[in-house]
Image 1: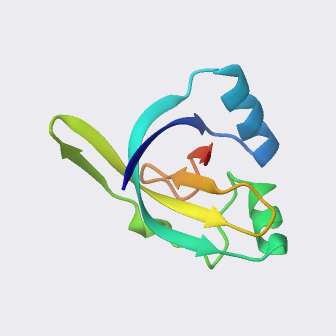
Image 2: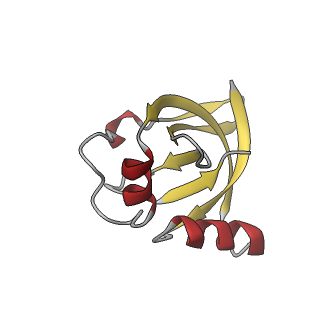
Length: 106
């Protein structure tokens, strides 16, 4: 299922992503489709969300990201990271080795 969201970019922490999205400070609107979902513990999620620009943890495979053009529109393949009692993160790396673009799934 395709969705559309505003993605923050180059944010270090989940709090930075939240501030970026609330203040609309130059992010990117993209259509995206989830290609992989990771269900992780709260501890793994918190460790990852506290340093989004660091090298990703071993459980996170960023190679599944794709980008296609459908009817003249770019559709980004994105990763979803979920954990109990935490907001779901949607990640587009754009080919980089870290969570370069992130949004909080609504």
